[in-house]
Length: 168
Image 1 (cartoon, rainbow, N blue to C red):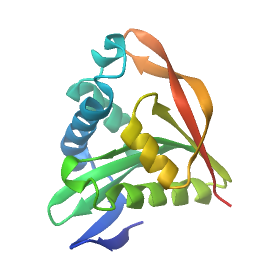
Image 2 (cartoon, rainbow, N blue to C red):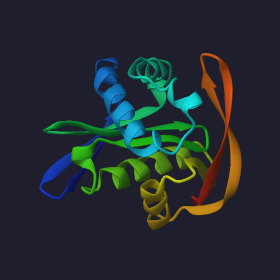
Image 3 (cartoon, rainbow, N blue to C red):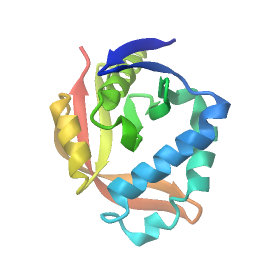
Image 4 (cartoon, rainbow, N blue to C red):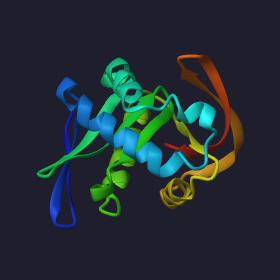
């Protein structure tokens, strides 16, 4: 399934990710993670968030990944797991251009198509830019939760903000 939207001066196509997208998506994820999380999350987690780790995670989850593509290349991606918007990252050139909104809308549509009436996501405590985006997009912060993050050393427990949105 492909969705096309015109944002600003360019067209953004939301489409399924392909194997050939992985290097670019891994770089977007790595750069975005560094921008949003490196200063606010524990170093015990940060040392596991390498470019290679993001590429490996993308390989394993590729069927659940959708990308925002444009004439200038990939601008971001989203990943869903059942009723969760699991990842949403936008490259610096796509920020403020409606890319995140398009990826968010596409992800919510996919979650709803699976029969869920409520979607949720975890947001790092202190990630103010993401929190503002989610709240502006209709997500409601419902409190905190402990997220269990996989690392090569086992599960890393991290307290995060939980956001929810009704899909009906």
